[in-house]
Image (tube, rainbow, N blue to C red):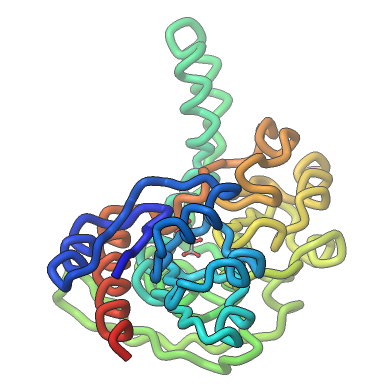
Length: 315
Ligand code: 3PG
């Protein structure tokens, strides 16, 4: 009963597995050595986050594998259907990180509306000598309260974003091909429960009316030149979903022209080596794919994944 947790696992999840008799290996095996390592150690359960890729070659070559566990939501790094067709159980933890991802969306909105990402950099370098210049440069912030957030994808994460945005006094519009309306309960300091109804609209309406557009879809190419052309001038874009959901070339053109005021990106085409034009752009707030990287989310993920493995292994 060997588990290789190749992208790590929260300590509580590891302890739960150990108590149930599993040996848990957390040493990181490089992608190119993974097949040999799994075969030599006869690993039955492989858990990953987004860094390790579990493609057909691994699935075909590693006959000891019984379970592939994704500690997180996105399964784009796993050939999940293929694995299932070979009798391997593929598990993930779709709900555990929603709150953390939504908080990063809200943080990114403030980062853009007050230019925090840029002012922070500038203060480090010239804050002591050009304070007044910087005070003037960052004097044109805007409030998010009263602005409209367009949420594309009203699943668990999109709804968590709506809940927080409502608490900030934002107008919410959403687009989701599978959801017509959602009732979202907002807890205000655990005192009051307010139910808000979010009715989804078509994509064009959302693009036309939003001050912030945030995307919560599993992947694909959603926003390019055509979609940006339909947006308000000065819109802010957020991609904490998957690299490429906003076309990176279109984004740079739109930022340079001023059509898009700022963007916040947590995910990139070509991770872990993002495009340098994106990384060096002065109007992009950047984080290194940390949407689910909070202590709380990782603890919930570890516990859920451990329970899923324990429950399913014997069957
Ligand atoms: C996910 O799909 O769960 C998120 O993108 C987080 O990915 P990570 O586990 O690599 O942080």
